[in-house]
Length: 206
Image (cartoon, rainbow, N blue to C red; front, side, top):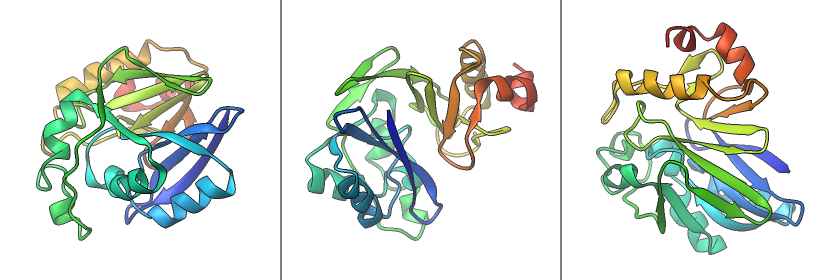
């Protein structure tokens, strides 16, 4: 499986370009820097089928409209993020000093859905708490956690739609998954679920 990380947007979100052995792929969390993301796509010969947002905050969705136009890919988000995606105040682009974003997904997904990207199967795991429709994506040995789980930390729950109780339930769900999974978060360095279960104080509390 091909994975390339492109630091994107003013908050340098981890934008992931993934693809199967035939270079059929997807882009996860393109928060900005569309030209930089497109350069990586083109240099690696990736045919992008989907653009996926783990949640609807502006630092994760800023380049979606341009990438969708330039690649012809479909944009996917969780069904509970629709309100946030369509409101520049709720998705925070109105106060980030970036171009305002109000966007509609081509497809909305829910817990347990599988998105087929070439030979890759992406499992949707609903993990609310940071936002109502926040989600993680599991494929093979990788777990893309957006702003739900970071290395030794978690996403904040004090913004619109945040709920610390739900975030704790989401962490409990992740805690029940396989230790070997590699955690690829929306910000910061990668980790493993085994490490987070042992050392992340937020996971230890659930």
